[in-house]
Image 1: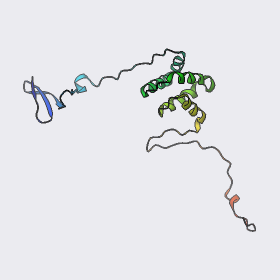
Image 2: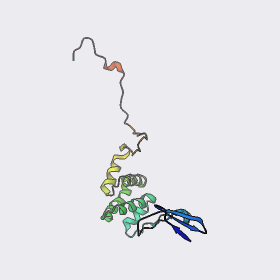
Image 3: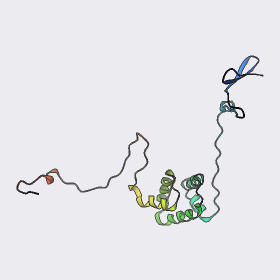
Length: 160
């Protein structure tokens, strides 16, 4: 095995044939090419381990509840226990589907307090959804009574 360092790259050759080429890195760093190992490693997946009744109730909501807890933990929310108790109680008030949708929306904006989820529930469908640049922003506007244009015409004899 022969190692050559021409310029900023490192070449490994065996019997005169180049086996691998890597970009040079600073001392103490490692250059790992995922192609040498059959592709990149999978990211570790760790499921939440609910301990309290509130944690179990939120995880019982399925993927939305688990994602909410994991995102809150990743954001460093320290007082999640009391917030989860309030969130679990909201299921009886608002229903399962609206609560899951509100938790997903709150998670989208990194809002993990029960008051934030309650605000999303109170706004209902009136809150606009997040749209990526270039994507159409669709908002359902309320129905209002309309009048014909002649209703706005000025009457000849009246001065306003």
